[in-house]
Image (cartoon, rainbow, N blue to C red):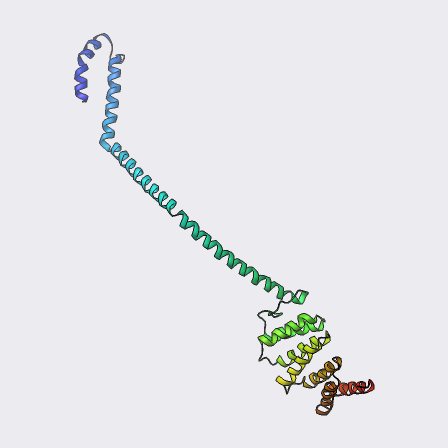
Length: 255
Protein backbone atom coordinates (compact mmCIF):
# COMPACT_ATOMS: atom_id res chain seq x y z
CA UNK A 1 0.00 0.00 0.00
CA UNK A 2 2.81 2.33 0.91
CA UNK A 3 4.67 1.76 -2.39
CA UNK A 4 1.56 2.29 -4.50
CA UNK A 5 0.84 5.54 -2.79
CA UNK A 6 4.35 6.78 -3.38
CA UNK A 7 4.25 5.86 -7.11
CA UNK A 8 0.95 7.72 -7.50
CA UNK A 9 2.27 10.97 -6.20
CA UNK A 10 5.84 10.89 -7.64
CA UNK A 11 4.98 12.89 -10.83
CA UNK A 12 3.51 15.68 -8.81
CA UNK A 13 6.50 15.59 -6.48
CA UNK A 14 8.88 15.89 -9.46
CA UNK A 15 7.17 19.00 -10.72
CA UNK A 16 7.03 20.52 -7.32
CA UNK A 17 10.64 19.81 -6.44
CA UNK A 18 11.80 21.94 -9.33
CA UNK A 19 10.11 24.93 -7.79
CA UNK A 20 10.48 24.33 -4.02
CA UNK A 21 13.28 23.03 -1.77
CA UNK A 22 12.69 19.66 -0.12
CA UNK A 23 12.53 21.21 3.37
CA UNK A 24 9.77 23.67 2.35
CA UNK A 25 7.71 21.57 -0.07
CA UNK A 26 4.26 21.06 1.59
CA UNK A 27 3.57 18.01 -0.50
CA UNK A 28 6.75 16.38 0.75
CA UNK A 29 5.88 17.34 4.33
CA UNK A 30 2.45 15.76 3.94
CA UNK A 31 4.02 12.69 2.44
CA UNK A 32 6.35 12.35 5.41
CA UNK A 33 3.36 12.64 7.78
CA UNK A 34 1.51 9.93 5.88
CA UNK A 35 4.57 7.75 5.94
CA UNK A 36 4.86 8.21 9.72
CA UNK A 37 1.23 7.35 10.26
CA UNK A 38 1.50 4.26 8.04
CA UNK A 39 4.54 3.15 9.97
CA UNK A 40 2.61 3.52 13.23
CA UNK A 41 -0.27 1.42 11.88
CA UNK A 42 2.17 -1.22 10.65
CA UNK A 43 3.85 -1.30 14.08
CA UNK A 44 0.51 -1.74 15.88
CA UNK A 45 -0.47 -4.51 13.52
CA UNK A 46 2.93 -6.05 13.87
CA UNK A 47 2.97 -6.32 17.67
CA UNK A 48 -0.62 -7.56 17.91
CA UNK A 49 -1.90 -4.70 20.14
CA UNK A 50 -5.27 -4.50 18.39
CA UNK A 51 -5.75 -8.22 18.71
CA UNK A 52 -4.93 -8.04 22.41
CA UNK A 53 -7.38 -5.19 22.96
CA UNK A 54 -10.07 -7.15 21.15
CA UNK A 55 -9.44 -10.18 23.36
CA UNK A 56 -9.54 -8.04 26.50
CA UNK A 57 -12.86 -6.53 25.40
CA UNK A 58 -14.29 -9.99 24.83
CA UNK A 59 -13.06 -11.13 28.30
CA UNK A 60 -14.67 -8.10 29.92
CA UNK A 61 -17.90 -8.89 28.12
CA UNK A 62 -17.79 -12.48 29.39
CA UNK A 63 -17.15 -11.35 33.00
CA UNK A 64 -19.99 -8.84 32.78
CA UNK A 65 -22.35 -11.56 31.61
CA UNK A 66 -21.25 -13.81 34.47
CA UNK A 67 -21.81 -11.07 37.05
CA UNK A 68 -25.23 -10.36 35.59
CA UNK A 69 -26.09 -14.02 36.01
CA UNK A 70 -25.03 -13.96 39.66
CA UNK A 71 -27.12 -10.85 40.31
CA UNK A 72 -30.16 -12.53 38.79
CA UNK A 73 -29.53 -15.64 40.89
CA UNK A 74 -29.24 -13.57 44.08
CA UNK A 75 -32.45 -11.74 43.27
CA UNK A 76 -34.16 -15.07 42.69
CA UNK A 77 -33.00 -16.40 46.09
CA UNK A 78 -33.55 -13.16 48.03
CA UNK A 79 -36.73 -14.46 49.66
CA UNK A 80 -34.97 -17.57 50.97
CA UNK A 81 -32.04 -15.48 52.19
CA UNK A 82 -34.36 -13.14 54.05
CA UNK A 83 -36.06 -16.11 55.72
CA UNK A 84 -32.73 -17.51 56.88
CA UNK A 85 -31.75 -14.12 58.22
CA UNK A 86 -34.99 -13.95 60.21
CA UNK A 87 -34.35 -17.41 61.67
CA UNK A 88 -30.82 -16.41 62.64
CA UNK A 89 -32.11 -13.24 64.28
CA UNK A 90 -34.74 -15.13 66.30
CA UNK A 91 -32.13 -17.66 67.48
CA UNK A 92 -29.66 -14.93 68.41
CA UNK A 93 -32.33 -12.93 70.24
CA UNK A 94 -33.35 -15.99 72.26
CA UNK A 95 -29.74 -16.76 73.22
CA UNK A 96 -29.11 -13.15 74.27
CA UNK A 97 -32.29 -13.10 76.38
CA UNK A 98 -31.27 -16.34 78.11
CA UNK A 99 -27.82 -14.91 78.79
CA UNK A 100 -29.29 -11.68 80.16
CA UNK A 101 -31.59 -13.63 82.50
CA UNK A 102 -28.68 -15.70 83.81
CA UNK A 103 -26.64 -12.53 84.31
CA UNK A 104 -29.48 -10.92 86.27
CA UNK A 105 -29.65 -13.99 88.50
CA UNK A 106 -25.88 -14.02 89.00
CA UNK A 107 -25.86 -10.32 89.87
CA UNK A 108 -28.70 -10.76 92.35
CA UNK A 109 -27.08 -13.61 94.23
CA UNK A 110 -23.67 -11.99 94.15
CA UNK A 111 -25.06 -8.90 95.85
CA UNK A 112 -27.26 -10.57 98.47
CA UNK A 113 -24.58 -10.07 101.13
CA UNK A 114 -24.55 -6.36 100.29
CA UNK A 115 -28.28 -5.93 100.77
CA UNK A 116 -29.58 -7.44 97.53
CA UNK A 117 -32.34 -10.01 97.29
CA UNK A 118 -31.97 -13.77 96.99
CA UNK A 119 -34.12 -15.46 94.38
CA UNK A 120 -35.79 -18.81 95.17
CA UNK A 121 -33.63 -21.77 94.29
CA UNK A 122 -30.37 -19.81 94.41
CA UNK A 123 -27.45 -20.05 96.79
CA UNK A 124 -25.96 -16.95 98.43
CA UNK A 125 -22.56 -17.95 96.99
CA UNK A 126 -23.21 -19.50 93.55
CA UNK A 127 -20.50 -21.99 92.70
CA UNK A 128 -19.14 -21.87 96.25
CA UNK A 129 -18.55 -24.79 98.60
CA UNK A 130 -20.92 -25.99 101.32
CA UNK A 131 -18.85 -24.12 103.91
CA UNK A 132 -18.97 -20.90 101.87
CA UNK A 133 -22.74 -21.05 101.55
CA UNK A 134 -23.30 -22.08 105.16
CA UNK A 135 -21.25 -19.13 106.42
CA UNK A 136 -23.11 -16.77 104.08
CA UNK A 137 -26.52 -18.03 105.25
CA UNK A 138 -25.49 -17.81 108.90
CA UNK A 139 -24.20 -14.28 108.34
CA UNK A 140 -27.61 -13.30 106.98
CA UNK A 141 -29.20 -14.74 110.12
CA UNK A 142 -26.82 -12.80 112.37
CA UNK A 143 -27.71 -9.63 110.47
CA UNK A 144 -31.37 -10.40 111.28
CA UNK A 145 -32.20 -10.73 107.60
CA UNK A 146 -34.38 -13.69 108.37
CA UNK A 147 -36.22 -14.17 105.07
CA UNK A 148 -33.10 -14.44 102.86
CA UNK A 149 -31.43 -16.46 105.63
CA UNK A 150 -34.26 -19.00 105.54
CA UNK A 151 -34.09 -19.16 101.75
CA UNK A 152 -30.32 -19.63 101.91
CA UNK A 153 -30.50 -22.46 104.49
CA UNK A 154 -33.32 -24.15 102.59
CA UNK A 155 -31.35 -24.10 99.32
CA UNK A 156 -28.24 -25.24 101.20
CA UNK A 157 -30.06 -28.39 102.31
CA UNK A 158 -31.16 -29.05 98.74
CA UNK A 159 -27.72 -28.43 97.23
CA UNK A 160 -25.61 -30.10 99.96
CA UNK A 161 -27.77 -32.81 101.57
CA UNK A 162 -24.73 -34.87 102.61
CA UNK A 163 -22.74 -32.00 104.08
CA UNK A 164 -21.55 -32.31 107.69
CA UNK A 165 -23.13 -28.89 108.18
CA UNK A 166 -26.58 -30.07 107.09
CA UNK A 167 -27.84 -30.74 110.63
CA UNK A 168 -26.88 -27.21 111.73
CA UNK A 169 -28.40 -25.74 108.58
CA UNK A 170 -31.66 -27.56 109.34
CA UNK A 171 -31.70 -26.17 112.87
CA UNK A 172 -31.01 -22.58 111.77
CA UNK A 173 -33.65 -22.83 109.06
CA UNK A 174 -36.19 -23.62 111.78
CA UNK A 175 -34.78 -20.82 113.92
CA UNK A 176 -35.24 -18.35 111.03
CA UNK A 177 -38.95 -19.14 111.06
CA UNK A 178 -39.21 -19.10 114.85
CA UNK A 179 -37.82 -15.58 115.32
CA UNK A 180 -40.28 -14.21 112.75
CA UNK A 181 -43.27 -15.82 114.49
CA UNK A 182 -43.89 -18.52 111.86
CA UNK A 183 -44.30 -21.15 114.59
CA UNK A 184 -45.95 -23.84 112.49
CA UNK A 185 -43.09 -23.81 109.97
CA UNK A 186 -40.54 -23.63 112.75
CA UNK A 187 -42.12 -26.57 114.60
CA UNK A 188 -42.03 -28.76 111.50
CA UNK A 189 -38.36 -27.98 110.86
CA UNK A 190 -37.32 -28.47 114.50
CA UNK A 191 -39.03 -31.88 114.36
CA UNK A 192 -37.00 -32.64 111.23
CA UNK A 193 -33.76 -32.00 113.14
CA UNK A 194 -34.68 -34.68 115.67
CA UNK A 195 -36.03 -37.13 113.08
CA UNK A 196 -33.27 -36.85 110.45
CA UNK A 197 -30.28 -36.11 112.70
CA UNK A 198 -31.00 -37.97 115.95
CA UNK A 199 -27.38 -37.86 117.11
CA UNK A 200 -26.81 -34.18 116.35
CA UNK A 201 -25.64 -31.78 119.02
CA UNK A 202 -28.59 -29.54 118.16
CA UNK A 203 -31.18 -32.14 119.22
CA UNK A 204 -31.63 -30.76 122.78
CA UNK A 205 -32.03 -27.22 121.42
CA UNK A 206 -34.45 -28.40 118.73
CA UNK A 207 -36.54 -30.24 121.34
CA UNK A 208 -36.54 -27.11 123.54
CA UNK A 209 -37.72 -24.96 120.63
CA UNK A 210 -40.46 -27.47 119.88
CA UNK A 211 -41.72 -26.81 123.40
CA UNK A 212 -41.49 -23.07 122.80
CA UNK A 213 -43.39 -23.31 119.48
CA UNK A 214 -46.20 -25.32 121.06
CA UNK A 215 -46.31 -22.81 123.90
CA UNK A 216 -46.72 -19.92 121.43
CA UNK A 217 -49.43 -21.89 119.61
CA UNK A 218 -51.29 -22.51 122.88
CA UNK A 219 -50.74 -26.24 122.80
CA UNK A 220 -49.90 -26.58 126.48
CA UNK A 221 -49.76 -30.36 126.75
CA UNK A 222 -47.48 -30.72 123.73
CA UNK A 223 -45.31 -27.90 125.07
CA UNK A 224 -44.98 -29.53 128.50
CA UNK A 225 -44.23 -32.92 126.94
CA UNK A 226 -41.39 -31.56 124.81
CA UNK A 227 -39.90 -29.49 127.64
CA UNK A 228 -40.08 -32.37 130.11
CA UNK A 229 -38.28 -34.64 127.62
CA UNK A 230 -35.45 -32.08 127.44
CA UNK A 231 -35.01 -32.08 131.23
CA UNK A 232 -35.06 -35.87 131.39
CA UNK A 233 -32.95 -36.84 128.35
CA UNK A 234 -30.50 -33.93 128.38
CA UNK A 235 -30.31 -33.01 132.04
CA UNK A 236 -26.85 -31.41 132.08
CA UNK A 237 -27.39 -29.01 129.20
CA UNK A 238 -28.32 -25.35 128.93
CA UNK A 239 -31.40 -26.47 127.01
CA UNK A 240 -32.56 -28.46 130.06
CA UNK A 241 -32.18 -25.44 132.32
CA UNK A 242 -34.20 -23.26 129.95
CA UNK A 243 -36.83 -25.98 129.61
CA UNK A 244 -37.23 -26.15 133.38
CA UNK A 245 -37.73 -22.38 133.52
CA UNK A 246 -40.44 -22.52 130.86
CA UNK A 247 -42.22 -25.39 132.66
CA UNK A 248 -42.37 -23.28 135.81
CA UNK A 249 -43.77 -20.39 133.80
CA UNK A 250 -46.48 -22.61 132.34
CA UNK A 251 -47.36 -23.78 135.81
CA UNK A 252 -47.54 -20.22 137.12
CA UNK A 253 -49.86 -19.28 134.24
CA UNK A 254 -52.14 -22.11 135.21
CA UNK A 255 -51.80 -24.18 132.09
